[in-house]
Length: 224
Image (cartoon, rainbow, N blue to C red; front, side, top):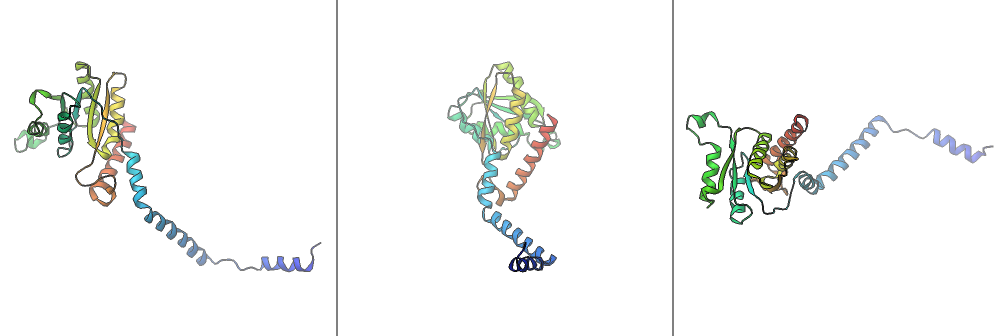
């Protein structure tokens, strides 16, 4: 049996006013703003964490060669020369990147020739520079070029310097192509000239590079 006081409380619950649709949307919008504000306040550590998770960093050890991939003339080439001078490897491999139409017209200089010039200027002797591959146009083809050279030369370890966001795809595809050959790579993560892992989202080039590499890596996972 329900006494009088209990009955009054039940009637009060039944007759309690419901929130209007407008009020509900205001409350929800407040929650969204709060979450967005929290994300904004934590954006720096979150985005640094994303970069750190994506980037592959490996300890550099003495190797049989240092490999220069196509691109990155202003960063990879100088790092390869520095690693050579520090005695990490006795040879520097330059990929024979696919020539541009303007290269054939001798209006521009082929990328492999530019890289070689930089290495020579940085005191890497010509006899230590080796061209690998032929008309290479992708990271996958660069990995195949290394496999062919390594099998012919008996190399077991190669250092590959490349920019931060490129390291993930390089590590994955080279590991896949070199599997079972007895040859392994060590990826050297380099800061691009425009940004580091601490501020990449504040730079247009950093945003472009991350988006491009995420897309390319997804393609490589499906393609290879």
